[in-house]
Length: 629
Image (cartoon, rainbow, N blue to C red; front, side):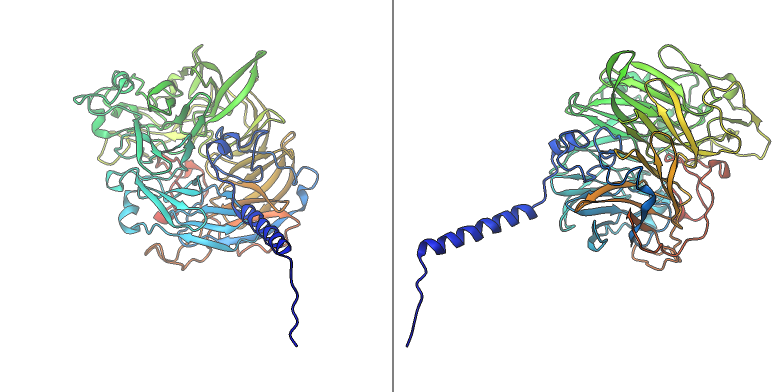
């Protein structure tokens, strides 16, 4: 006998509707929040939709590297420990890339521009994409070391710079290429090592090459298609040809001789910020080439727009204002360092400012709408300049010129502050700057040889220019430091040993902490208000990248890369024979993972060890694959 149960149609439809709604909710929950211009604009503000993420190189478009996270704070930072590690792969050398975190996924990039995506909780690899750079052909063209500082994130894409001059957009979920653009060609002695930035619907990126015969520039690309929107040269070209715009026409008056045959310099390889309200993109520019001024064709001229901060209209690509931090540069004191946008109360008046801790030792505060000089002060011991005039132009110490005899001046040739990222805490109102404190020897060659930047080292004893000195005095024996700087009152709040302007970096958080990586391999947590070291560990690596912090499932992490993986061979990008490979480290409270085997100590990151400069301003160890910048 057959029996049956009749189920009411309404009940069936109801169940279907409920399960369908649940399925839709599940799909909606699984769909990651799209990172558009609004999301990026609000990052780090009270309207931050993804406070636990790290969506751009400087955490936000103001480049403050400040996180509102406080699960790790000054009461529990001593409980930090290693959560997990990931071997980034072959390549060796310094790691300089800032990771990104979105959709519970951690994105990183290696020295040879290999992009990887990991589960941000466990480190499990989700995908990996290799641009397959022709290393044998490209390596000799690189002026400044095989490095990469990071990526951009926009509209479901990871936008990665490739060292051979490409800009690659990858699907953030799969790693599949979406579009490819050409920024520059290595045949023209350009490479791309900087982290691109998103401004509106455009990607802004520049090219390295400032110690070779190159003409500096940066360009804007449509973020959806990769089509170039505009290109801005930072120095003029051949005066026999029509200048590209009024800015280049004006700059021509500040050069002389056959400067254009030597390229001119002015490379853009690090500092970029964006103000959506003003519709302005800000960039820092590099040194003039050759950087010994007597070889540039004319002396006592400013050589615009080298060593400058530029404000360019995002829509038109036209120059709105500029401020030159080192006119007629003679010391490789380029102004490419991190640009930070702050809203400060100065002398009782709210000001929208842009600040920079420059290589030349001065901390600059400018009106970011008009470019007006507000204030400037030396943040380390400085002897190349005697001070600033009322408009902010440095007053050069006559003893700082070295056309005939070698001299040693402060700050070092690597800069008081270089590319190592600083951070800002609105809680303290201070900027946290990794700094160099030692001097450097300068000596000009007798003649400019092809492929040379005009620097020489004869072995003659330099004259130390130790006074008159301006800026905070240096403690006995202290060579590198982390410094808390008050940008309103232009004075030092505190300084502790350990840091350096090349390598590592800082992140400030709402937990009254500054997370810092140091190029010798150390990672530490420091109180933002007092500079007290609460936690410190030696990771066993050197050539350190900057840290980030993020949350997943209510847990806060700190992540950074460590380098100096010594490749047994340098045959190609697929070589995995590495004795001590570069590693991504991820720390959390109560982490119990074991540190990987330590790499042997490497040469100091002190430019006094090697006279050769590069546009990314680091000393060059002997092996090409270990060059830092």
